[in-house]
Length: 296
Figure 1: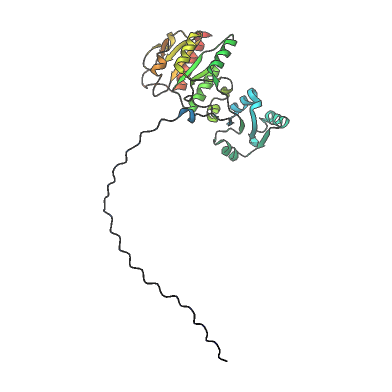
Figure 2: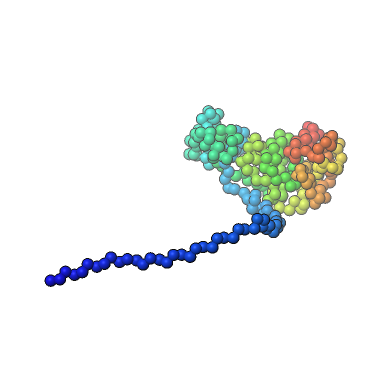
């Protein structure tokens, strides 16, 4: 019996060699691309940019103390460092009784939670501070016997300036801060910390139609007094008693023409003229100090 022949192993035929790639030609030394035309900047949607949040991580000693004192029901959770535990013992005891979460955290963790190195050892997650409407403000003013001035901020969009102005406003008994809805900065944790607790005492009111709303306030018995670094009578000679709305503009643009047209008076702060204008929060302090002097 013949043994079957062994199968020869399959041998794959060799692939033909790939043709050599041509050497790329050198690019020209200087290829000048046409200059890219800049697109015009799109105007920011102020309402979206200043969209209110329902909760905020507030921080800072005075801000957190005032928050707990004025609206404890809005507290959600509390964070303190070991160094601040004794100082906020009352708050922590309240959290335990009310079954609110609290935690003792390291300093670096609090930096991460708040996004700030200026947390001062305490943070409170709480409901955001509510903005008022003009109708609410007028009802509140009508219910009071004694009323301080109103401060209208025209074009002021820096949260730190708003915080500083709130602090000054609380000191001089301002009834409310007023501004255009969507333009006035939000009451962010940074603004509230700079305000040193004043954000819990002085309401911030949004105006949908500033010109119409200022005329409405004028009809309600308020004098509209605009401030300017270029024109107007000296601050010390102006009569600033009674129901008054003090209008402060941004440092770059000042008070807008449409708002200034509603004003019954215009005043300026005398000085050397070495600088064009004061920081708006500083100017606010000077004007409110004069209002306080005339009324007390």
